[in-house]
Every structure is written in structure tokens, then in C-alpha cells.
View 1 (cartoon, rainbow, N blue to C red):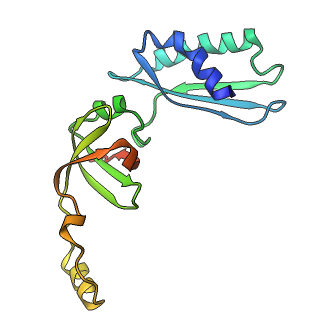
View 2 (view 1 turned 180 degrees about the vertical axis):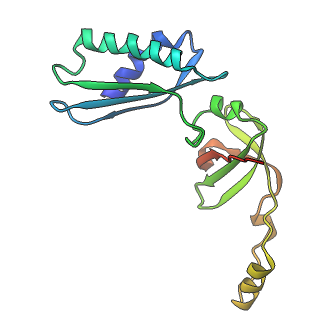
View 3 (view 1 turned 90 degrees about the vertical axis):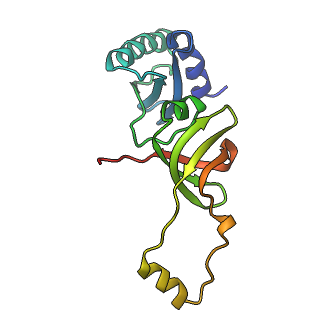
Length: 175
């Protein structure tokens, strides 16, 4: 078991019976040098600075008492993922129902739309219609490029299995 898996396991008692969930665990540096442990945690309602600090103190003390990294010094950072952090779990997607997402798909395509629903296997995104400006339409025609097959461009409510999504991010709007 590697350090990330061990730390994730040690973290479980501090997650309040799955009220909080692990988004990401990173261990940077090398044993014998200074190590940096970064934990990103969240919950369905979000996580406060005080909750992050409490988990950090408890886990940090446990790691020190266990001499988890031997004599190597380490820094432990516990925080929530920023709004620009990619969504990685169904729970994160559920928190963002109704928001606009940008998906980078495994097939190299990108789509944007409003998140309608989430199951454990997939999401349904109300995909926005892609409109080319007149300049771009003219450039496509001038270059002799045939318009893409409309069936190749999803529109409206479209299901996307999690295994087809390379990256999903929330689009920030200040409108």
C-alpha cells in the first residue's frame, strides 16, 4: 500500500461517517527530504475552514505519533477544492446540478451545457447548441470543409457515462 492509500485510510475516522469525502490526496517530495501532503475534502453542503483545520490537527497529530514518515519533516494542508478544480466524483457532480459544465471527452471533443441529473454511472447534460459566427462559417466554406455531421454534435439533454469524460469543470458566470 502506498503513502496516498495509507493516508486515505487513516483519514476515514475524521470524515464523520462519510459526511465529508476525499476529493484528492497528494504526497509531494521524497522521504528524507521535506514532504508536503495535500488533502482536498468536501461534503454535500461544502466544508468550512474550521472543519478543515480540525481534520488537519487530528490527522497531523496521528501522523506524527505514528512517525509515519520517520524523522522526515512534513507539511499537511487540508482544504476544499477550488471552484476551478475538476469534478471527479458523482457526489461533486450532484452538488452542481443546474450549473453550466464544460466537458472534455475521451474522444477529444468538448461540450458545454447545464447539468440536469446525475446517477452513479452517468450525467445528463443539456448541451448548448454550437453556433459559428458568420466569419467562422465563411472560413469553413472558403477552406472547402464540409459541415460536420449534425449527429456528431449532441444538442439538448444528452447522457455522458463517467468513463467517457476526461475532465469536467464548472463554468463560472458573472452575469
